[in-house]
Length: 356
Ligand code: SF4
Image 1: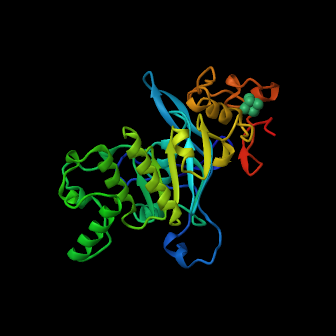
Image 2: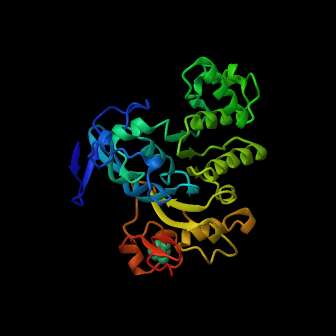
Image 3: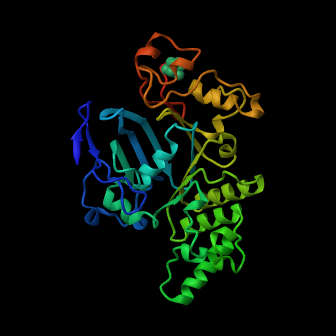
């Protein structure tokens, strides 16, 4: 159902019950006939490396508090992100900055009561509900945060969707993909509880890549792993990008991400504050554009743990002007009254009135 929001823009309101089933999904604002419009992208002559683009995304939810009183919260206010073939873009930010919600938006698995405005494009065309349902698990794959996504009652081999039609083809594909992720022969017959955390994560990766996905969305794929397993998991994602896929790595660990990503998108209170090449994270952060990005960089242990006082605002108490203004030591009057627009700057972009 399309409605007009308070800014006069068209937005889509989902009117189905919330569900974690992948068949239940949002659709974005665009309306096309996907069957007619789907390009044969592998034969496309377009040179662009751009594969996915999220433009000016806002997501809100209406909640009931104290009986029938309604309130609207906006966990995503103004997000922009692009994913390019051959690159890893890291999405970093504190808990509650909108990282996982963005992943669910891209995969089309937002709860049914989400109100969405903004645009989502994949391979040059709007990623509609019908299109994402068709591409999910094939061209667009999700590596979830939790190994609980594995069905505990199924052998892990049966949870990897190989392409082959005949039994022998399937077995060979499975062997090949398990070998790629260093999963020993016989792993396919095990149940998830028989695997270590690292093995379970490798099964999730195998499952996400088995059908040749071109876009990988990895949502915090390394929690609970030891250093060696983290390096291995991130190394696999890097390999996938080097093979020409686009990888979105969602993480709260900037230091880990910088070891393998090409670009960094910094999220804060549901807004992308900056997108910067990974190489801009150096020295005292003078190449970075936004004070918050600089603060994140300087808060790393290797940079002396310089924490910024204060907290990220919650979705129901966003400041009127710049979202970072209550914590910013260079804020001026305009920062407290006007949200800074997105603007290009030095090979990246930023939302800050005073970035130079
Ligand atoms: S807009 Fe103002 S308050 Fe916001 S980050 Fe820039 S200088 Fe600081």
